[in-house]
Amino acid sequence: VLSHAGGNPDLVPDAAPVPGQPFLRGATGLLVDAALPGALAAALHWLLTHAAERRQMGIRARALAEERYTVHRIAAAYETLLHAVTPMRIVHLLTFLDSRGGMERQALQLAYALRSRGASVFFITSMHCGNRQARPLPIVGTIDGFRVYRIPVIRGWYRCNAIIYALGGVALLLALRSRYDIIHAHQLHTSGIVASIARLLLPTKRVIVKNACSGLYGDVGELARLAGGRATSLLRRGVSTFVGVSAETIAEMASVALGPTVAIPNSVRATVFAPPTRDARARARRLVLGPRAAHTTTLLLAVGRLHEQKNLRTLIDACAALDDATVLLIVGDGPERTALERYRVQRGLAARVRFAGAVEDTLPYYHAADVFALASRSEGMPNVVLEAMACGLP
Image (cartoon, rainbow, N blue to C red; front, side, top):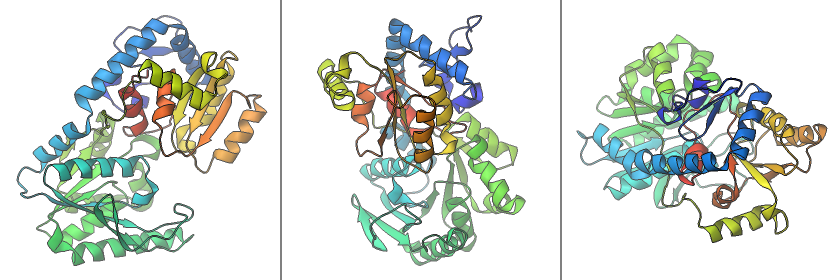
């Protein structure tokens, strides 16, 4: 059960389990074995029928977000890590910055905060692959004032693209070496490998690699599947410091002797993601649910990529055990959308499980929701959990 919390200390239970209840009460919500639809349904039912406890969990969640996970607090932790490098000149290395997923948003948030502290920052990424980007993008461009260098890849040639990305990334790191002192790679098994190769060729550079995810779909597991011990050995030789976003990600790196490690969690823009006023919540519910349902519907919210990692079928199964006034709204898109839409029909939940698709602004959805639900098989420290906490959602 605790492993599903990603090792997040804020989710450690603060109350003893109640006999007969298949969940544990935590500081900001309930911990559940996400493989069991019945346990998930029981936890959701408990939250929905205990309004006072739900409000207290939301208040605690917001307080923890402000205390520990604000963007500038995390940027200060990076400044401490990089105290010997002055001025800070950083290149962020990612596979698909333009996809704006959780890892990409974290990289951009950190870049904004470090730039505000006087750092020089730019990005190296790849152009587009498959359907990740509908429109052509320039090889050299800008995102929000940051220079971005994109490595062209061939649509549909996934195995070849890994080689192209590695060769192109190392070549750009060599060509642009006068512009940076620090390489920050945002994944062990992709950009981390590229950064490690570059470090062997540029020994004066400092390399920081972030372990973005743990568990079944985590970075350490992907390392073992892709190249076994060779990749791990390369990381040991090429990386100055490994960053873990949670206790679980750090433990997984220790299990394969990757170090030294430092714990720096992900961040949230707590000034943007904040609890709604009464009027703002009413507007959000009308927008999300419609005028008629805004006063009568209990809204469960799930946000994320529609992928088997997110275990959304189990969440749909749990929703089937709740009353008819409860609606599950899933925000996001991905390869499982068509299958999940069929599955809700098979379960007789076409009216109670809804799909919003990919949206630019998720804030109204957090403001409209009563409870946030995450049923992932594995995670690191998800943006959506921190955003829900910052909005005061249990």
